[in-house]
Length: 305
Image 1 (cartoon, one colour):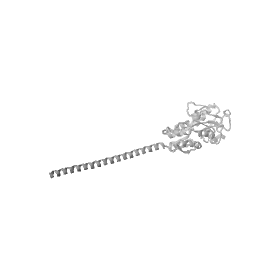
Image 2 (cartoon, one colour):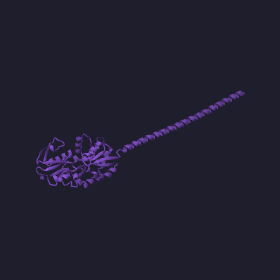
Image 3 (cartoon, rainbow, N blue to C red):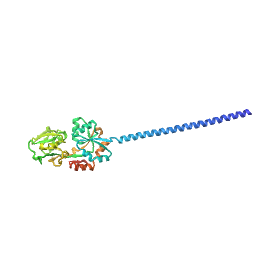
Image 4 (tube, one colour):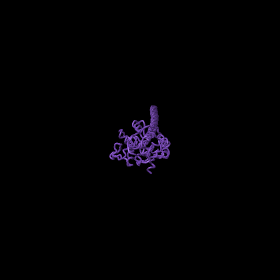
């Protein structure tokens, strides 16, 4: 009987021990599961945070693209200053480089030392691309249409030109052609109409046997005392301290020669490029053209009204 009690006690003890051990094991198992779950949550949280941070960094990098735009101009730094508030209000900053001739802003664009330039019209750009094998493009919208005219200290009308008089033309291909077309529109010469960008060698008829010299448009006004007339953009007369509206006759092709921002082909549709072109179309620039440029530049957004 005692043996039976002993066996019964032992049996109960062993069952209790097994039960207790199972409970301990269960607790340990639950603890392990809970710890794993917490670690998993932390890892997910860290992963999410890292992913979110990477995403935010990508967005920041994208939105901060071209924080500072390297802008090249020829001799119109004052024009940039006139619209600087509008540029900054649109969220852009520009670092301006001023060049002293008509080709260097394009050379710099090709070399990558600037991102964009602002001084030329499309015919000039096309002539430069053709001559140099580049593929620069003008950004839309264009900025302004420049007045181009004949200026003289000696005559008030084309009828006063004499046989053998000397006319000063721009040395660059596009503005040289523009000047020749102006002479043709006045009945002074006849050009070979099969030539897209004519030079003096494409003159088929020269009624007054006019002679021609060439110079960079920026310095062309300096030749006024030495020739019968010069043919250049009115803005360069103003830059030389002269009256750009005191001309003998003017061209009627202003819209064809609209000036705008120019970039490398891959940047044509870049947000910073089109955004900059839109930002400068403001009252401040229109006022600058009317006052500082004496009306020799017509804003495109006013011309197209």
